[in-house]
Amino acid sequence: MAQKAWFKGLVGVAALVLSGWGSAQVVGSVNGSAAAARAFYSDAGAAFARRDVRLAGSSRAELSQVISFSTTTSLQKLAELGVIAANWEQQFPHAAAPTLSTVVFLVRRGNPRAVRDWSDLVRQDVGVVVANPKSCNNGRYAYMGAWGSVRESGGTEAQAADFVRTLYRQATVVAKVEREAVNAFVKAGMGDVLVAFESDVPVVQQLAGDALEVVYPPVSVAAENAVAMAAHVAGSAPQGVTRAWLEYLYTDEAQEIAARHHLRPRSAAVLARHVDQFKPIEMFGVAKYFGSLDRAQKLHFADGGEFDRIYRPTPAQLAAREQVRAAF
Image (cartoon, rainbow, N blue to C red; front, side, top):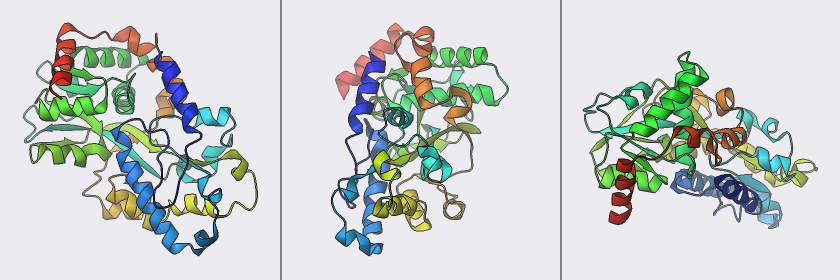
């Protein structure tokens, strides 16, 4: 069922594209984790419109040929459907992802449990709040970050599975969606660590006041925000405003806008100017240990997949979830 719902949503978003340069849609977003990307595309679109006079004569059709994903799903499915070009990853720098985020830890002020790395999340004295990877994007990347952290340290696939099994079985809360996880950690005060996207940290901290701080593990997963042109545009000439818009996303001006919205810039120069905001961290791509987001979905998060084999909610976890849902 989860696999069908995920794929249905992916097919459905193929029809959703930029509705205007000042009000860009983030296609594929299904939860709050896309808020930063949505704000970035909106502000970047407005800035692009001000600098590119060609937009004044552009038709609505010309302004609706870009499919812009948050980190929710793989564009490869759309390539298989012929919606975007088969070689979409080669059409723009950094595998057609002008920005990215990663998975970090939010802890209570002072980090009383001394959480520093993924391995600390399975200590008996540490309570973890994490989202379910079958039902939200935040959860999928948390799972892949945990799995990949074991592989990055030289562990085997079996050891990675054991680690992830322990993490989810011991977690204080395995929330259905990201918002539920935030409510459990911030509003209900459950757990010692919230596993979250770096791009979501400012919003969560705002909810908590001065009660939280961020911990960057030594290594984490790269959550890339990919973009692509509709196939009929990518294969035609001239491509006009559509290509110019996507190329603009890689300029330092647009990258500064991304940083303002808490998305990690690809530009080394811009990233260097925001080193206090984006702490140095080693990142591995999804492809390194999972092949692709599509393959990860099929093997790990679909019904009967790896996550179903290694995890069943405990009575305590079910009770915690009900407590959060009833309160918020």
